[in-house]
Image (tube, rainbow, N blue to C red):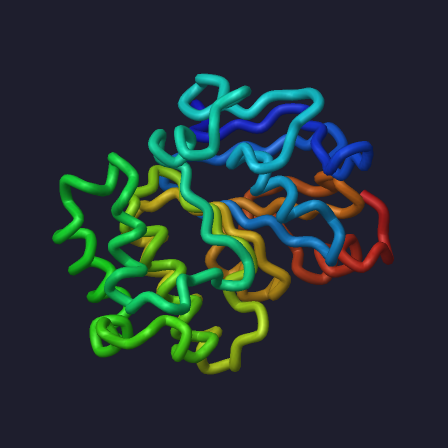
Amino acid sequence: MTALLDVRTLRAGYGSINVLWDVDLTVQEGRTTVIVGPNGAGKTTLLRAVMGLVKTSSGDIALHGESLARTRTWDIVDRGVVMIPEGRMVFPDMSVLDNLLMGAYPRSGRPRWKQNLERVFDLFPRLRERRSQMAGSLSGGEAQMLAMGRGLMEEPKVLLIDEPSLGLAPVIVDEIFKILADLKAQGLTVVLVEQNTSRALAIADHVNLMRSGRVLLSRPAAEVNLDRLHDLYFARETA
């Protein structure tokens, strides 16, 4: 099976500091690929490298078999790769509705923006209720929903989501993971970075564990033992 998104022997970092060391990542169409690992493992750097936000020094990133090397970030978005960053990052002085409409600005999202808006409101009923409210007045959970909804307005072929449950109350985490499960059921290709390993494993098709800028484990979720995953996560065991 040909990968929709394929990362091969990737090295990347910030200035003279290299973070990723020969990272491989294969993302199959319609699957939920989860990346777990401790802080500083390079998970966010990997997503940023895919989006062209971090300079790569070697290796390649391909979408549908075509290299994204030297492709500008906004062109990567137009080709269907969308990232929902850690920390929500909504436009606080704009309404919920205007934030969502900003997600439809790329060319791919413009023709069906009305249908996509209804889809987002169906997934996130709270956003429909708060469509006229300023985004800066939302709770943390609502802001995360808004960030996810804005990403979906772009009609992504691949949706990269960075730590969606970070800092949220357990009841909101439950809601976020229910929505992730709904997106999986709809056949959307998702790459999810998440520190809550048990919740992430429950919705994953494929699991990757990163530590110190390397992928130490890459297996179908059904073959992953949670206890061993935690041993690798906390460096109690070597791969």
